[in-house]
Length: 109
Figure 1 (cartoon, rainbow, N blue to C red):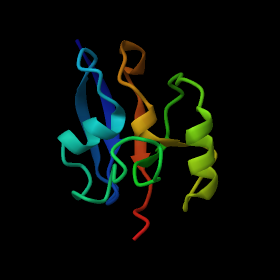
Figure 2 (figure 1 turned 30 degrees about the vertical axis):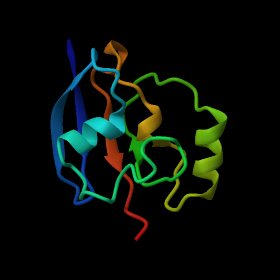
Figure 3 (figure 1 turned 120 degrees about the vertical axis):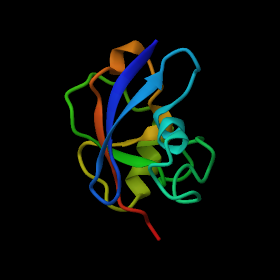
Figure 4 (figure 1 turned 60 degrees about the horizontal axis):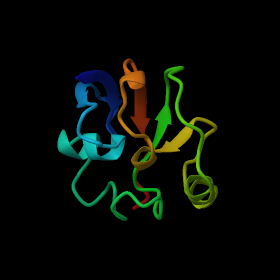
């Protein structure tokens, strides 16, 4: 089953995408699979919460899992952090995410 997620890219364009719930993907991988960020500018660490290249701002009131310590630590050092910042590699695609809307944070380069 797929869930509909809205992703606003770094140019401000909104994309509604279908994210599969049966492939153990995370949001960063969905963003990459739809090529919504230039290659090499997102998920640089491979989804290990060791860089903030996949930071996004959660704009919907979708309930998300709590941040783990690794994610908290990375966001405390990242640029452009807001109260609604999350690392998209730490958001796993589940049926509960239907209607999620996120905006990609600016690239740190």
